[in-house]
Length: 165
Image 1 (cartoon, rainbow, N blue to C red):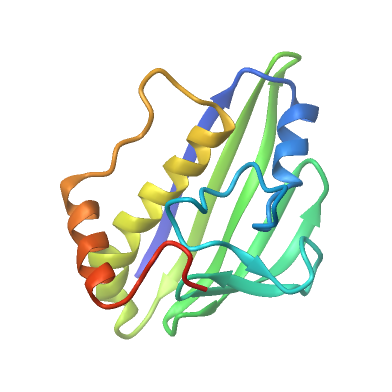
Image 2 (image 1 turned 60 degrees about the vertical axis):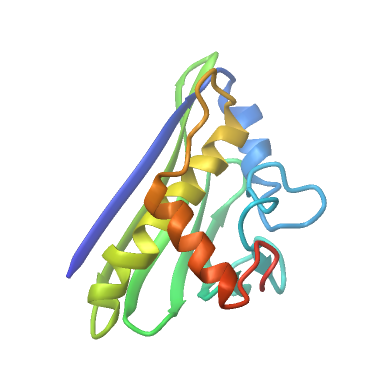
């Protein structure tokens, strides 16, 4: 199954400021984008550099490309059946507004054809919206759906916690 999943947030800041935010991505103490207080932390063995390997929770990937202040692309290496990438990109709109875009493009095979829509997609969507809330806080921050809360409760009963690697 082909999957294209795009989330965007218009940030009231110039591209340089949003690019600086993107450059903190990698779950270190300076990370201002990844919502690790509520989700498994992103871990990268060599930070944002091509070839760096890591992931978050059961999602594994390697940095395919990194353009400081502009874009970072991660190629999936797991779970089995995820074939593609996800990326954050900084898209200038004008001097005072920038679009922060997260794109996931992949083909799923095997059990991932069911696991993506039933398990991974709802959690992915909630995580990305939480990250975008960190980039541009809004009067109405993203809220987890009842289904996402149910999945998180079920996973917690199986030993999952936001800080899982």
